[in-house]
Image (cartoon, rainbow, N blue to C red; front, side, top):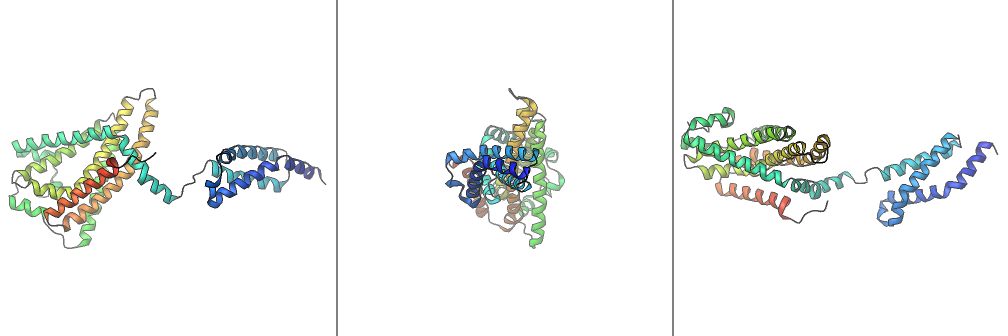
Length: 331
């Protein structure tokens, strides 16, 4: 027997027992039976992995048998993915996001969410009374493209007709929904990303969004159409406004963490807040997609005020229960 073969045999005899135990535990876990492993066996895998990794290092440095080195490399790779790799499937991760991660992320920024709601409401009320006192203020808050003829110069009949206009083709509705989703996503992402500048840009975007809404309500209210406008708006507005509010709240969370990092560095505070806010923003984009579908299709196809109120109320109930009223999901 050659010297290398002899040394390899002795090396194997001294350490093979731990290799075989690690291989057995990994085989059990890889067959989908990880729950059958005891607590002690789960704790043993990282220790056995480090021991096997040490054996591989010695085998390489002393030029032992190539077949044994190859075996140890494969065993270490399997153990590495078990110890450090993800063991959740894509489906499991998606389920975890919707059942735990997203709701917990939204609940964690409840203070900023309240602040974002108050900013929107206060700015909306301010714009409402400004436009009521002087309709010229309307054009300071609502761009011409967004107004689309729904401005102080429009008659009551024209304003009412704009709330019940129908689009003949579904293709046109699809284009409209795509445009709305793109536009609202840009606003939400700006409200989130610019929050790092000590909250100021997020506050401005939330306030401007509230002013736009308040100015529009003022025009319709002056003709006695406030109720019909709210029914028309809230079909999609419950989801859309809540999504933009959450985006602004996530931006406020980052800005506040940067301004007041506490014992952490500002960079560390921004990184932690950014991860939490980014989790919320993934859900916000989903909400805006739903809102675009409601705005592009449901709002245009549903022509009765009562049905619009039912859709708006149902949307509000779904989001409130999902985020706040159901039992808190475990982290």
